Length: 179
Image (cartoon, rainbow, N blue to C red):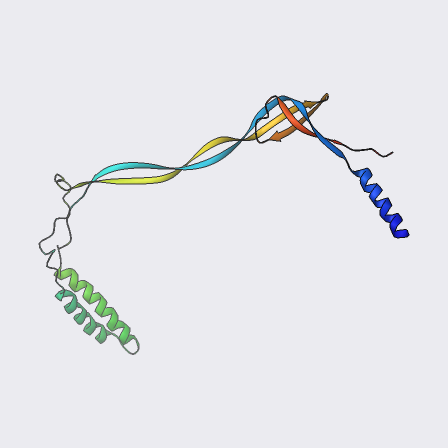
């Protein structure tokens, strides 16, 4: 018995709290666009023509010799071995080999590095070099409209996605007020 009384009281309370809703039209007073600044990426490219600079080989450019490096490495190793003592003897020998090889190579292959003549006319090929970079343009886009509308003598404000035109459809809710 108690359960049925409680259930009926609860259903009456829920029915009394139920609000009725319907739609109506309100007159739009103003609709101002709302803007948002966004960065839009784009590629900006430019082309340049360049001349290929050609190396003029030195007298021994094609005939590079390695005998100087070998002889210098052997001589440096012998000298380093004579200088070092104890556990430092191996380190001194290795350092002597490296320094002797570098010095021997430089002595044997002097003047064989490529040379460039900046005063001559370029008879080489021209080629186009294209360089691109990303640039961001700021654009203002409309994200919605701030709308002021009049409904039954009251002014209301809202934001809509699209322009509402002259009239805006509104939902009207009617709820009983308990005293």
